Amino acid sequence: QVQLVESGGGVVQPGGSLRLSCTPSRTTNAFLTMAWYRQAPGMERELVASIAGGGITNYAAAVKDRFTISRNKAHTISHLQMNNLKEEDTAVYYCKVRTAWGDNWGQGTQVTVSS
Image (cartoon, rainbow, N blue to C red; front, side, top):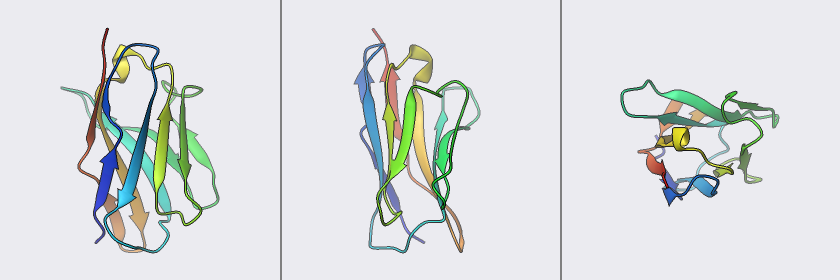
């Protein structure tokens, strides 16, 4: 099982941008799919964006046109570019990857949008 490390979280004002990254802790084969989820206090974890093996992307309605998911050529590192952030985007963001042996989750990175 590969460990995933998220980075790039922090505190930003409304309208600002952040770029999250999800990196494996060791060399690994390409992931089948890569995704970002988020969980706000008192809320269930929800899918934010995903990218499949063929490059097909999927976004939650709340973030479409503001967030962009991408990955490296090896399909082992994913990024989530978040623009025009809103206070309701405040949450812990988790990356998830799917391998032939199942799903792996990262530990999460806090994103706080506040004026």
